[in-house]
Image (cartoon, rainbow, N blue to C red; front, side, top):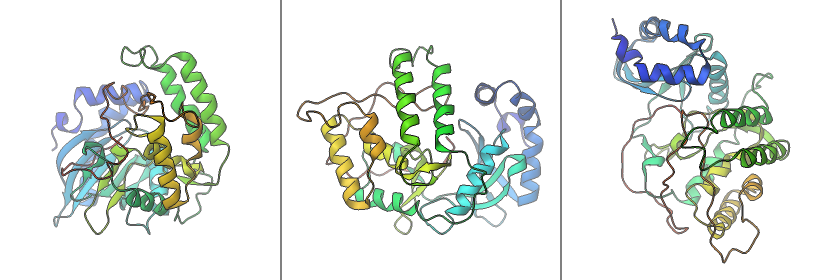
Length: 319
């Protein structure tokens, strides 16, 4: 019998209820039983529990030794969307493999990426050739989604709804005004309506990309998939850790040269692009809407020539 505190501690429970509402409380109460059933059904031994914005995640192994990740969410539509996307990207080595799924129960069993170093834990960025290869791999998608994935504009509305709920938070209030959120929502909604439509990862920032060694390179995890402008997945790679409009412009041009990606959304929503790039500007902080609070205000600063990250090791979780 699994220890109930291991399955779900008080802080993780509070986080899930904050994200999904009071109705998630009954799911949290039933979670130990769900974990037990998954372990029996898929032959699992669990070693570590982690929390993400929309799920409870367990690191472990299948009997026989293969490392796996069990991911459980109170919202079956979250599991269903992720499973659809991972099936569609099954041919690429740059996306985590889905081993088993029971989407009605909100349960996914994924491969564990080794060594699984998180790019978010590295001091720099990978080469732009690697980034372009990752973005190109996400354009190779199979399967008919059968209308089961939301439009990108729906995801935009949802995310800005979460931002609106958190404008009064003491870590958000100094950074994001109501006017800024409204303007961002309007611009993002407009951008979501254009571009070449296709399967979009939807959350391809540094925390959701792992280093899998020389054979697979970069591997994307934790999609929040939609159907919309596929260049949206390039936004984080254009603006992440950038410190000036000049650096932003340099990144856009380098990404476009290597992958043919226009980075149209990044050009439109980041202040200063297209203006006088000789004058450094401060770029707005990124608000991670699927998390309890946004990322800390202090950000690492990275010059445009720093293309490679340093050594490190991490375990994958869920965002």
